[in-house]
Length: 119
Image 1 (cartoon, helix red, strand yellow):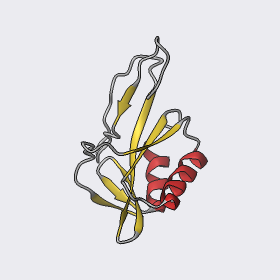
Image 2 (cartoon, rainbow, N blue to C red):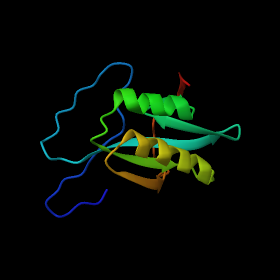
Image 3 (cartoon, rainbow, N blue to C red):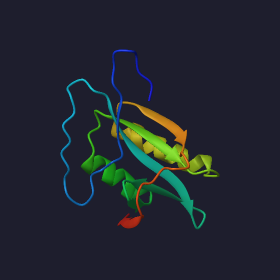
Image 4 (cartoon, helix red, strand yellow):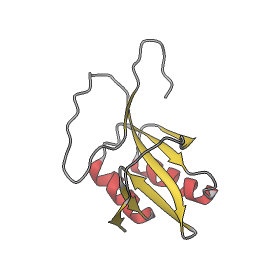
């Protein structure tokens, strides 16, 4: 995340599991959620936190649990199809999220063990 010298960047790894989680963030602090795009059995898969979705489930989860006033970072697995990334971008843009960045997932990224989310 890039900001000017006076701004503080805060990265929240979609820590909204099955229950709501409240985090105190100073006013004006930019917040971005982290999502992940990968492949499973030659199909695109999307993650928010530790929940694995198809495109429809990803869209529904983002629209119901996350504030569109915030940004989203899309991490992707090495070798993921460009069409999977394009699907994620299109979903996020249509939902009206403020900013989006796309980055290859760092080797130490741990989104938790995936559990089926539906869709």
